Length: 328
Image (cartoon, rainbow, N blue to C red; front, side, top):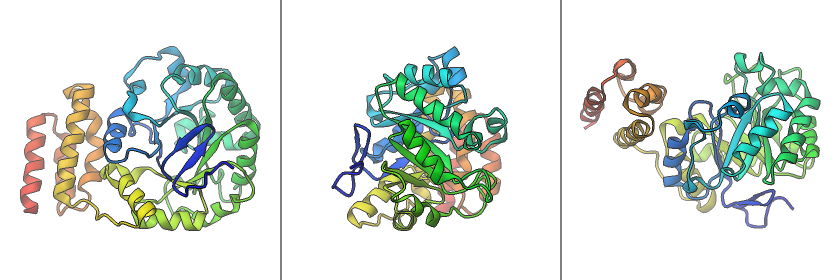
């Protein structure tokens, strides 16, 4: 059996995950800093890195994107590309850091699919299979895949694709319940994922529109998945995965952090990015996170503009402090 008798444990190959929740990979988002901060809340969830180009990794293997430490375990490292030999080489480079190698077959972004990477692999299942086989042969840790329902509503091939990935040696799958054509619009179709039960023997995670503990529990019920993967919703609430785990495992519903708590969380996140990247680069990198943390604040548009255009750390803190005062 791939899923152990304990309802809150998932086995991926020989790796035991003591949680039904994973952090989904987000390009340029789920860096070492975000993963580390989420780990402070959840000791057991499966973390996943941001998408790493296999070609770039083979050319330069030691960069900020590959930084990690033992606190991240268990962590899956996600690679993208369409050349089996390069994917195998990049997996081998990451093997000593990773508990799992995850292969991106779901990114819908134009520049990725135009390069025959990401979700374009769902239109070339044989190449996708060859990649999994090559990576599986290169490493001695489990290999997993993340993909979508298909390229479009007229080409939802996720069941056949999942079966092929299992046949190639994948130990688990994560399926974003949208097609490539949908990008991130519309609603994730959790219901259709339930068709995978009985069609594959390996665990699968459901992904898409999971933004509260309640939606996570509902997704598990509807999709019949072995676990759920949380992505964009975690960007403005580092405690979300932990809160989902408490609700799924113990029925304990921990309230969402209030806005003042989120401002404190934002400051800690910003400070960590600056420590990790340096002040100038850390501030620039963090701009994408401001809208997520302050989205429910009155006047958030004006605050967001000030924050994303400000380059001075002390001025940023002053803006955040003014937000906190307005909430008092």
